[in-house]
Image (cartoon, rainbow, N blue to C red; front, side, top):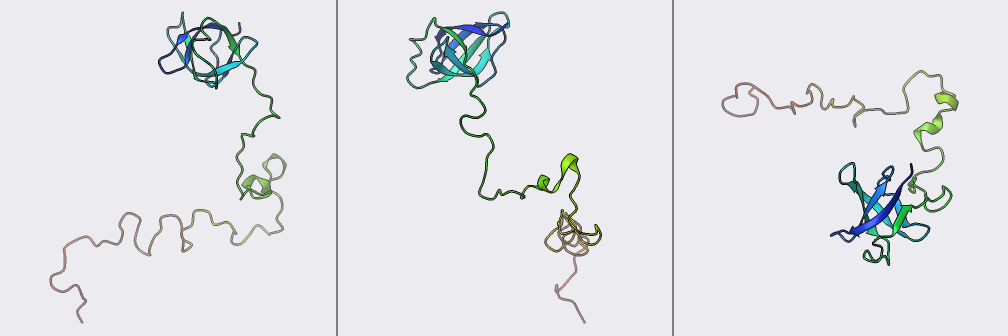
Length: 162
């Protein structure tokens, strides 16, 4: 059973409440007057299971909520894949070959880069600024200690005596 509904009333938020039969539409789906103009997008599905409602908000430009009362509505067909903006975001830094996956051939196998596979890697991994593993910090100091000496304090000057 597909979706079919009717505009029941205007909401206090400026949208419309639509009673419907069948499967609830997905959130964000465009709703239109049957065979006509798109009135808005599904904001929420609410109410009891035996008498659910959808809240259509925000309404499209030029749609008067009071004028749509009692109108039959349907889910507007989705735009085709070739139209509109692409969902993939691009930045100025993305160029062919800059993705990590581009070094892999078919089925996840790595391409031969000409190296022997031995010796230091050109990739850094989780190394810190001095080539040590992550969190290594200064020599002899473990992460979390921050070099603070524990134990009884020395009496007198903080300088070393000769």
